[in-house]
Length: 237
Image 1: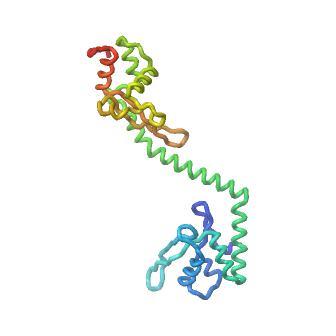
Image 2 (image 1 turned 90 degrees about the vertical axis):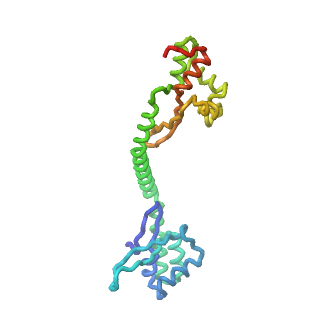
Image 3 (image 1 turned 120 degrees about the vertical axis):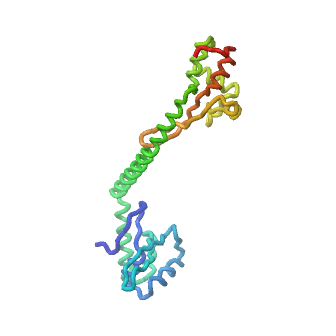
């Protein structure tokens, strides 16, 4: 039988301190009793959480303060009472805890947590999709060029170089960063020269959103590198 209502929010078991006080049939008022229980070393935010609700009374609506206490705190409080009601409550809490930690309940909770997490990720994905579309749109600004396309343009204008070779050259000559954690990101110098623009690209691995950086060469950068590699100022586009 359910002696006291168990709450399973936030993936843990809690109970109403007021309901426990009422079940124990104590003569001390709740407002005095609960602070005394807290003197045993219980901490707010760890062992209990303050809650309140508005309840109708003959004189109007009154705010009633309660506390959601963890099952560990509830067991200790029940043991402190040293009476039959306390023993009943403690045995009840132990049985609730035993069922909670059974393999069937652990598996069930794991599935619920996974479903909840997937729903959150899917919601975040839907919220980020417009940003991804925007990022792709601004990446198509006229005059911007991918580094691979720049390599093709240089080859077309007489300087044969592949995409990977061009990346390596740009890193070796201080236009792109060499370090692994920021590899192929433009250096401060090349950004100040206005040779590149960097865009944040959102992509998904399953339901999880991730972000990568896409580097594009500006129109000024294209002219700069074509002249540097081929010597041309008027080139075939």
